[in-house]
Image 1: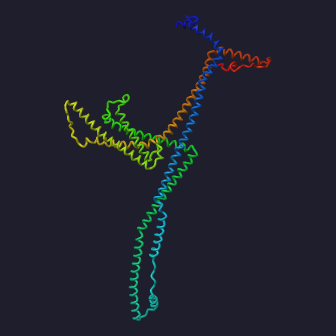
Image 2: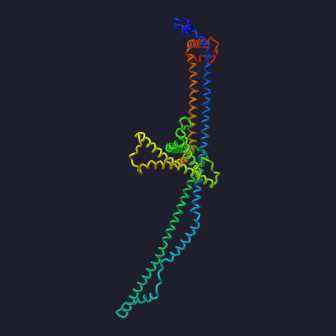
Length: 493
């Protein structure tokens, strides 16, 4: 404060001294106006231009990254479509080899049997018996005119009786013939059913081939769109990747919950095995690390098992032959089964440790050996059985985490790529906004500087306006003096 008072002209009147200093500084500030404007412009341009260049680089990087994401997305979609087409062709090939390879022989057999049926059916046709010779005699007798002769009437009665007997015999023979024909046709029914079932199976197989052909056409059309790099396919693949990422993440979260339960299931017996008072780093006990190693090892064996079975394709195992692949399957499954047995043993050990702890607490509470009042029943073995079941099933459940893990990795590349592009674009917008704000702040500082020296600027403006009126008068030379932009009152308020 003392040094500040020494700078004042009248220390006893600081306000008057400050006004005198300001009025004395205004001519100096007015003289340094051009230099200060240049300094402010250079300073804020030095901040604004790098921000603008950074914004341009960020947008350019976002476009490049988006193009790379599109290439990766289309490549992944092309691979999935190619795999789908290969599977459909394999399905059609298996269908042809399994069900339709004997179709020509079946067709010949059906043709032969149908021909035989037609021949037998023609034999079963109704053939009227030839008329006997005596029908002509009967027709001649029927032409005899009735008379009162008794002999003629008796002959006609005998003929009528014989005709009735012959008619009944012919009808009986006709019915017997039809019964035989019906029995022959009835014997064809099982064969007709067999033929009908065979034809239905062939029709079903042909329908399956048509459905596979339609799916192949759909996949080929999608492959063409991917090859054409259309925006519709890109949006469709991005949407499906996002949905697949969410579902895979949900499955991984559920698997993480199972791993958490498995960890606390085996941590306590592992503490008894490796020592509960041993610490690795900080507060991390050795039992924690041992339990985590077992869980990770189970997950790894499950990953190799799924990879060997061909359900996942995280590792390049295409060069391994089928015999070696089967060996990997059995080795992975055997190690996983051994680990499941180890967890069952640890679960039993955990139950024994808990029972021993409870007994010890009861003895300490009673001051002497106190036995539980509850009798040992099968209900007390339920927790032990549940722990054993969990210890055996959880390792195999963790083995299936390889499938959602693969989809999470492949879809996560697309999802994180899209999020990274959005983040870079947002950062580019922020830097461009800061660059624009910096330029505006620089202009505002220039105007603020002019506002401080407004009185000399008003005088300058008035003098310039008066001079311009004199030069444009009729008696003048008709020429206007030229001034620079700053001296012409560009920054005058």
